Length: 77
Image 1 (cartoon, helix red, strand yellow):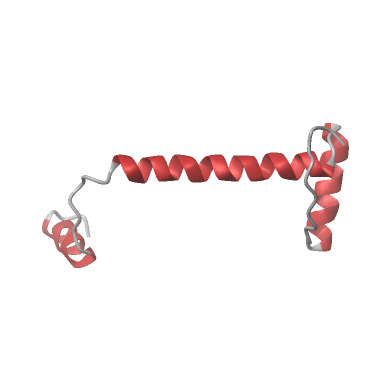
Image 2: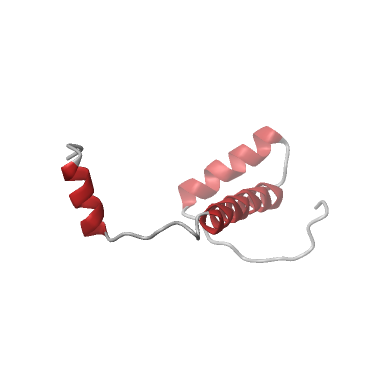
């Protein structure tokens, strides 16, 4: 195993597990490295989402009803 040092048990549906094993073999990486990279990408997406929300914190909030009325008023719905 490479630089990974913590262990965890993860359960997959059999077909997903088989696909992951095939992907790992075809890309010449371990299953652990493949899952580690997938989790890192997921957390990176989360961080980007949080940054986007933070950058819009000063925007005015409107209710869904007001939004729908505005869309109707402008011929969008």
